[in-house]
Structure formats: structure tokens, C-alpha cells
Image (tube, one colour):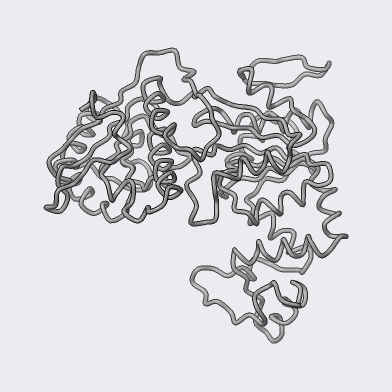
Length: 428
């Protein structure tokens, strides 16, 4: 660790580059941090929290760190605690957990009130929550009798937004509580989540959002890459920082991924570079006769890697569709390679599930039209999301990236993905 004196106070810092330091030392007002894959965004968030607490004397209880998943929130909190002598911590949580906490304190709800996927949806009075009754009246109605209120995850968002809009006293309480808000994976927020965070951050607007529009792949949850531009429009005086150095991807893989993503139009312009000085790194595209031949080639390559001493958990096969999984597993099992979604086997994951993860060796099968991009992608926006999915998959690799496509799938002629057009002349 490097100990740096800043404003006469000692802050414990990792070796951060200049753009990371600039983001860490941002104190007041809105800020957009554009963080490329493997650019150390989690370290920036944690170090900024430390800076606010140690150097700016912000009470930890006035800091809220929001992440996309519960696992990410727990990991971030653990990393923060491992660097702190004082175990007083800020609030770490997902949007749903934070917003439910607000509802819990307002209405006295408990975890029993959350509707799970196994539960049936209750019959709600009126036209959802936008009718004449507010959330308090609705909860009162649903609470009649012995059964507890059951609200879905989507309803947690809509109830919280309604509560904060209608109750000035509750809104002011939480605005005073959370004076500094940091948001990870900002590109994955839907409009309601963003609206709630804007309300909570007012009137000081100390909203520090970290994300990458090129990794926005959850449109089915309401997310859009345009949220980054929307933030700049909502906060025209916001500071903007670019974390453009990837500590994960070697130059050859990062350059390939940039070639792909730069074809998209709905994005903020950015140029990334690899922070790695070594010349290691492998990027290959392989043409196979059939899908089965693809999987056989992958199996042989993985067996070679394992025989050379690589650990199974450093290897991942990332697929666009779950329906390809059974055939891949059958072929790999024949070679005594056992894929799983958990350690210590070779990982077999969908590209969506791999987001946020890192592997030394990544295999991407089925880069064919109607698979990636999906045959359902009929609009420019949908095709750009498919390209972002490919980009996310490519940038999981820290040593080697192998991409495959077939000439025939299920005895029908197959066409290589349009996303490979910029490579096919010289990499087959």
C-alpha cells in the first residue's frame, strides 16, 4: 500500500492511476464515472468512501453505497472492512434492500411481506398504486385479516417512489440520512430506481455514479445505456471521469473488444487501453463445420489447458442461450471435463450470468447469426444490446479468448455473426 498525504491528513491508498485518484478525491456535487471493464471501479468506490470518512470527516452513517446484487454489496462491504481499523461502516446494499428499508421504517414491514417467485400475486384494489389511494392506504387495505401484506420486488420500487414523493417529512429524513450516495453498475438501473436515487440525493446532489454504457445488457429489466447521457442532462454541472485503463485484459483482447463495441451508436465515445505491460494474451476465432465440432474443439483445448496445470475454475465457457448447454455438457463429459455453475469445475455460464466475473481463459461458442445476435433482435437498439452482450463476454478474459462459429447448425446452413465481420479476413 502507498501512504499519501492529502490536505494534511493521511489516506491509505492503493496504487491508483491519475483518473482513479481524480474520481476518489471528488467530494461534493454530482459525478459520472465511466468505468471500462477491469478498470478498478470497486477500488475507486471504496477509496472514495475512505476519503469522505477520513479526510472530509463525513460520518459513515451518512454514506450510502448501492450495488446491483446482494453478493456484490457483501463483497464490497467485506473489502471496505478489511481496509478499516474502525469497523463503523456506511450503508451497503442493493436498490431493493435500501428501498425496502425505507418502506419498513415507514410502514412496519418485515421480510415476510416480500412476495417471492413461488407466491401467487395478490388481488390489489384499484388500478395498481397510481390510483387515488396512496401506499399507506393500500397497505392498510391489504393488511385486513390475519395474512401479512405481500408485495413484489417491482412494487417495492413503486411504493418507495410514491412514499418519497408524497411524504415530505419522510423524504427529508432520508435525504439528511444519506448525504453522499455512491452507485455501482449505474447502467443497470431502471428509470424508477434512478428516480428514487435522484430524490434521495437532493438537495445537495452528492450523487456519485459509476458505470459503463457499453455493458448495459438488462433491457428486459428496464435498463438502458442512455441513462448515462440522461445523468449528464439531469446534472449539467456534474463532473465526469473516465477510468480508461483495463487491469484485466491484455492489449490483444482489449483491442479486439474495442473493435466490436465501437460499431455501436448509442454510446458515449471512449478509448480504452490496457494497463498491462506484458505481451501475453491470445485472441482466436475458429470456424468449425458443425456445433458438435465446435464443442469437441473446445473440449480438446480445455483438456490441454488442464493438463498443463491450469485450475479448472480459471476456465469458462460463456453461452448466449441456455438451450446449447446440454450438448456442450455431453461433449465435455466425454472428455472427463465437468462443467458447472459453481467451483471448482470449469464454469459453464450464460453471458449475462458472467457479467462482473473474470477468468483467465474464456471460450465463446456459437457466434452465429440468430444466436448472437439473437434472431429476436429486430431493431437497431436490440442489435446494439446484443453487441454489448458479446462485448461483456469478450472482456471477461484475462489471458486467452477463443471465439467459435459453425458452418452448419442442426443440419442447416449457418452464417457467422455480423459481430465478427471486422475480424474474419485475418484471424481464421
